[in-house]
Image (cartoon, rainbow, N blue to C red; front, side):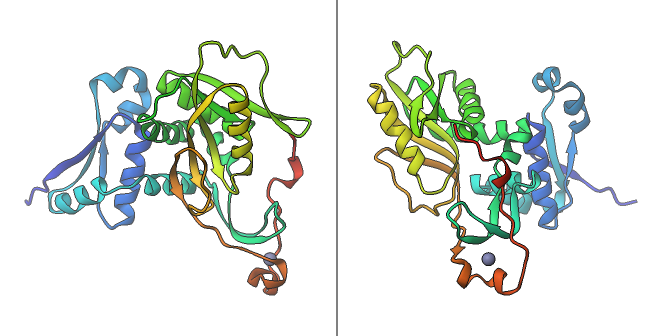
Length: 265
Ligand SMILES: [Zn+2]
């Protein structure tokens, strides 16, 4: 009987990342398997110190599988997470600008699964490590949970801004006396307008903004700030005027995402 040799190509302490890597290998025609997956699922908090999840493949796939796993970029992970959470939608959408697009990022789905959000924040935190700052600021409301999570991971303070009578303001009550430098964390960068308002608002309060971190740069890299921008995933989603939209010509139903619960913060 021929014995099939199985080898470990990567180890993980995080089930989510292990499963992402496994599905990437599967999609590329490999035959991966996770060891200790159930153990971690049941006893994640205690098992993490004792067991690592091992990503294994048949020996014949070892070299190529390793190359694929080590060559993984942030954007691969972010695309994966957006897809697995159903946040990257294809269809016919009307944007707030009035233009139409064939793709839409339903960002609220990122927050719906806190573990997915946590994994994205961890990656963003790795980008922000090179900057020196005391607090992470999130613009309401999408940025609040993410900025809080990044602040928790990086052991920084957390602040948030909100729109009050149309003007971007720092939520009252925070103690700024020990804070000098801050980083801004937001979910999706589109035109950059509101992030620029957050920068000005913080500067007016005597805080120095050292970096902006976003999960997704939807401007395709076009938007620039007076401070460095860190993004996990850069995507240029084309938008069309309604009179020049193929989906309109094909008569596809138009979806206005999020239009039913527009609230102003
Ligand atoms: Zn259209």
